Picture: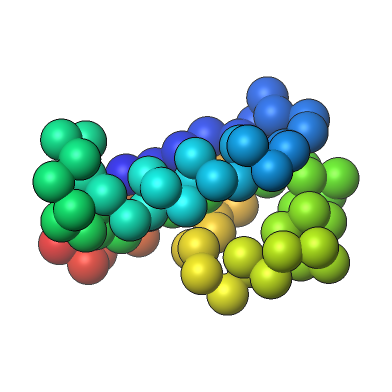
Length: 77
């Protein structure tokens, strides 16, 4: 799954909790891992939340843009 953050200017704790839940569960909520999740095109201001506050940069995979995110997911398939 590739998520495009190009239009995201702010993340709060509720958003981060949802990302963690999405990472943990598939769409049916049956507890199976979703697989590789890529967060793409994150702005510097939003990136700071991941790096300096949460440490989530070690949990999620990031890509510069959506095309590179899609390519990286396909390479692992």
